[in-house]
Length: 114
Image (cartoon, rainbow, N blue to C red):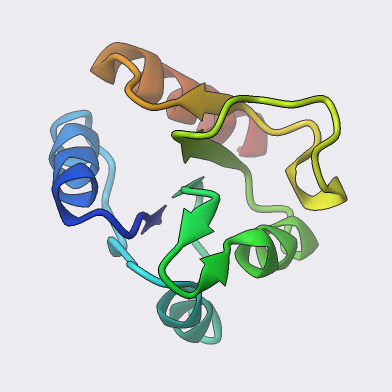
């Protein structure tokens, strides 16, 4: 699952992850779109931007944590120690990140979940 509101970044993430063997849901450009999809689906792993068109992705992070679905944050914002509870103990990848680092982080999350 990709949640990213910048179209070029979203398309790039989708291509990277599909090339790495992931089946991709999304990209979802808004919190509302992602939450609507989550009503009927649960991804194996997710990539979330923190700031979306319609606000924060914290409701998505909370929904994923409730389902024990691993996810990584992929954000232009720097990591800070004072993160909301939903984002604690989650891999933080600061944009831009090398393709290999992104796919390796998600592969580790997917293995941890198995």
